[in-house]
Image 1 (spheres, rainbow, N blue to C red):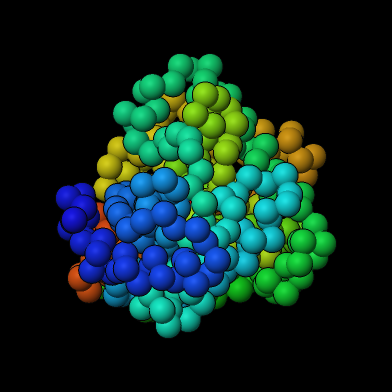
Image 2: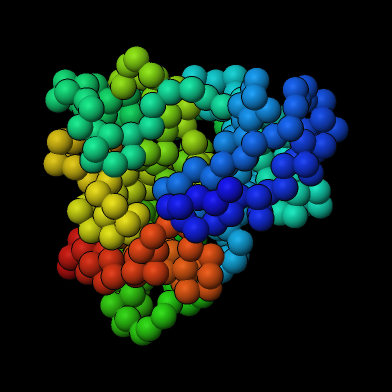
Length: 344
């Protein structure tokens, strides 16, 4: 059973017999043999639908190769989704976690299946009216605002990260990641890192940040695109500056992001409001200002440039999770140039 969109055989990376025993050992009622399918479209952790014919679950594990040290953190996903279960932030209920990968061959989380609609491509977005697209954006922004309003200490995430100095560490982190995944020398990356290092905001709020927030990392209510049924893909979540989430969400709107995901993404569609409109809706929803907005946008561009390079890096290492992944680094230069323009 292979996924024709990715070329990955799900059964070669997630054994249904072993997974069934793992679920049963964790107190999960399993009606019969498991069927596993890879969900296509992901460029990060591998995501599978699992069913026994009665119940459905979602299993996630890291890619099979080309890993960078801080990416694909399954423990991070598990901690934050477990903690958010009782808050206003919609997440899939957690089921079981193979922390070290001792059972399943790699760290792997299993959560309940959340039924709903995923808007990933332009074709998906075409199913919505203009009014529904606008309502969808309001739902996305209000959900992000709800996340940033969570008292992380009260939900047990006080040790989830080191929020103080977050932005400065992000600059250093993505500079290090560049050194790991780069396939060529791009002096503008060092230039952008230098400018960002000189302009780190002195003060910032500290909240839970998702680290990868956009429409296709949510599941929407099946009958209301303005309601988020679950936020997914928490592998980059931490404690830090919430404006980094807002800026990244806005930079993802750039058309060049299509080259990173390898298809015409819904989130880059001109049918969504502009990045400036998105940012203003966040300000209105939260009452919080954006601070040095150009810094945050430049940092988001650095992050996406390195991520694009990393996707191509993994593809060349034989761990591609989608057609065209080896060409994702064609977007790197554009993101870096956009970041430099913000700080010029």
